[in-house]
Length: 169
Ligand SMILES: [Zn+2]
Ligand SMILES: [Zn+2]
Image 1 (cartoon, rainbow, N blue to C red):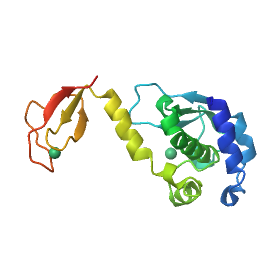
Image 2 (tube, protein in one colour; image 1 turned 45 degrees about the vertical axis):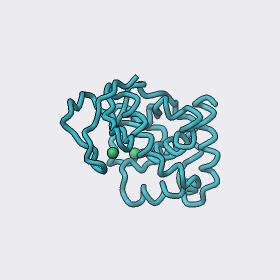
Image 3 (cartoon, helix red, strand yellow; image 1 turned 120 degrees about the vertical axis):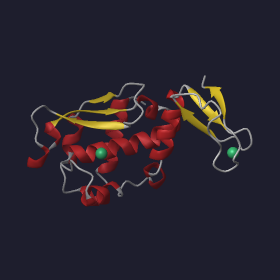
Image 4 (spheres, rainbow, N blue to C red; image 1 turned 90 degrees about the vertical axis):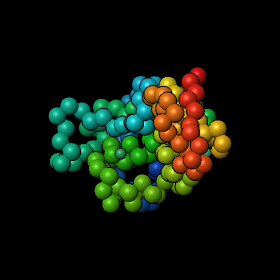
């Protein structure tokens, strides 16, 4: 499914959520969708406002330049998380510019509960992909993605065994 179609799918599901029916959901299809860089590891998606927009004065979908999503979230494995990311960014576009209590309440209305909790695993997935080294416990197999070698300085928290350096290929 391409990004445009995915966005429209999310918007149509949003039309069915009573708790956000007071927000201008029907204006969301006008927002262009794009991709973050492949090597982004901290950011999963972002809502970019137009130059000069002051969040304090209230934000509307027309103030949004684009929403960018991480390309790896668009694989089959993570597509449910991608939908949730779009929902999250669309809420920002609807005027909830920060992650305050109201934002979190509305965010929790997304019907796919499991997708809402996939962020941590997705972050690990990104760090594993980008890490040069994996510190591996030879006893339990736990893997810690890292930018540098451990050089025998670290032990597994659970097994107390020295972690081995494996090149991440
Ligand atoms: Zn956010
Ligand atoms: Zn271990």
